[in-house]
Amino acid sequence: MVKRVLKAEYIISDNNQDIHCTLYRKSCKNLRIAVDANHQVKITAPLRASDSYISEVVKGKTGWIIKTILKLQNRQILPLPCEYISGEKSSYLGKEYTLNILIGKRAHVSLLNDELFVQVKTSDADSVKRVVDKWYRGQAEKVFREYLDKGLAIMSDHDLLTPMLKIRNMKNRWGSCTRSGIITLNLRLIYLPEVCIEYIIMHELCHLRYLNHSRYFYAFLYSCMPDWKERKKILEGYRLMH
Image 1 (cartoon, helix red, strand yellow):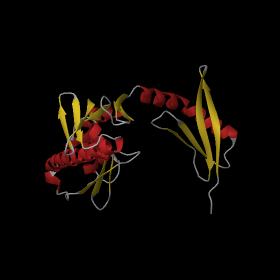
Image 2 (cartoon, rainbow, N blue to C red):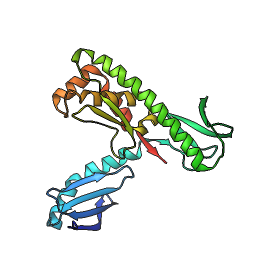
Image 3 (spheres, helix red, strand yellow):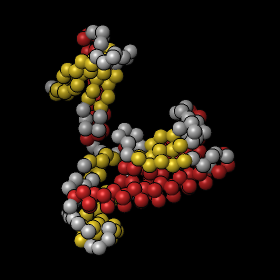
Image 4 (cartoon, one colour):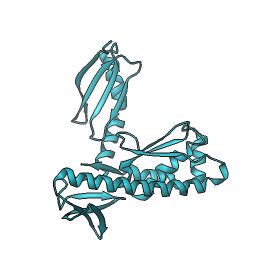
């Protein structure tokens, strides 16, 4: 059975400015409003919701929508390569580097001062991307494991089982933890400062004890990382851009 979804443009007018949104009507119970990383506002409403009801809810959320858009606009952008050519910018552990593509007999990546040297046999974009992606994954496995072990050492008095670590690209989450003790981290964390990486890993490790976001979870997180709020604020100040 195909689920029915109606899509339409929706405009919020506030203080002589128009915010263009996308309204989705679908089979759901509650109205939801979300602002994505590209500042696009998406409103999801039940099929039978009246126009007046939608207008009333959106009006009550207009302040939050504007605040969220401004917050996203003020984030520091970490560059990522698109064409994989010399001169492009890329990020590693929160620092910006310039790609320097070299031709050599073997694939190799190294950091020197403010440059990311990428040695490849052929300099086509696909070849360079494969080498760069492999290097980033290798660094992520090394850095993430280091902070995972550090976090487990801090929690050594709580008899937590050592989790299985998985690393993959995720669109909307920096990390996750399952009941079976599997922690999955977003590969893209490797572009961010280490204080952010350490915070996300500690956050997920705390879920090994409390698989929720209750006050007990946050009390446990604070006992393991007293400055977690400051780290979270730093994390929220960044966004990645291709």
